[in-house]
Length: 402
Image 1 (cartoon, rainbow, N blue to C red):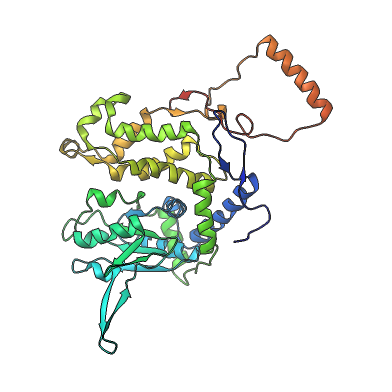
Image 2 (image 1 turned 180 degrees about the horizontal axis):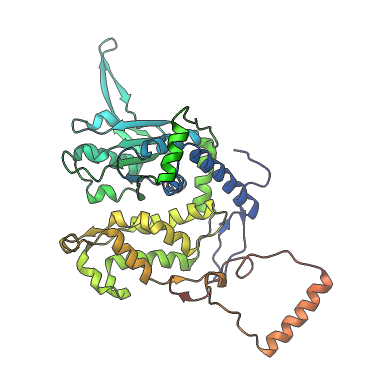
């Protein structure tokens, strides 16, 4: 679809090593980030606090992944999902999972019409852009497994016929961690399908006061700030137009590898707490979520900080802890925290290192730079270039993460 002038993608010069990439020019990144900023502000006009939840919902939308929300009732999980669907102009449906729910109740079924003596297909409520699976851990395993094809293949098969789901499609599942009776915990394979798991806590006293003031009279109604077509375009931009340096990819791989072989990174004491490390979906999830976060932060490239920020949402729910971890009270978040504090991150620009100092030039380099400065002064001022070489990021060794 057409957009404002300057919006789009343009090829940029390849970094050292000869790789050819396509990245967004400066104007499109700012335009797209402004659109996302307006959408976030519109959601926050309805949702009080819960900034992390709102941001992660938008990251999941851009990355094309699904999100699992865990928290007590009444903390705006359902309201946040419904508001997000309205702001991005998508369709919304809520399915309340119960012990007597059947797979056909959510996917659809074949119905016999006596008038025509034929079977018709009645599609279920999952054919929407944003599906809220409320209290997903209350449904039995056969219903939970019915979501596997939805979340992975984005299609439904009924009576031998396959029906594709709308694009974009996002599953937002909620569960209450305090309840242990009448619930069916999600199996590891099902949890791994979710890009992120976000814990939602109670609001602060100041936020509680704002909730009483804002929702006590006429609750605000969100307005549409994005169209479905624009959201699809932004998803494509996040996948293909945000540059990921080789060092950032290596950092994501190192974080994943540390969950499988902690001793390789000097974390041998964690080995007895981990039964099974995270899958390769975690690597893809770190990079995809990092790209989406970079786009929201007005950048056309991913920094290690982006990967670090989403790691607490992408990795913990994929870890399978041992009985020793349960006995010692060690949580998956604590394991991931140790890994993030130990695995070194690449320094792509000197500004990421507070202790970085310029290297004194050699006499020959100093003389060459003087001649170049004289020639530049004669030809007039030059526009600013981004950090790195030829406007691109350049790896400059590694430094330990603070």
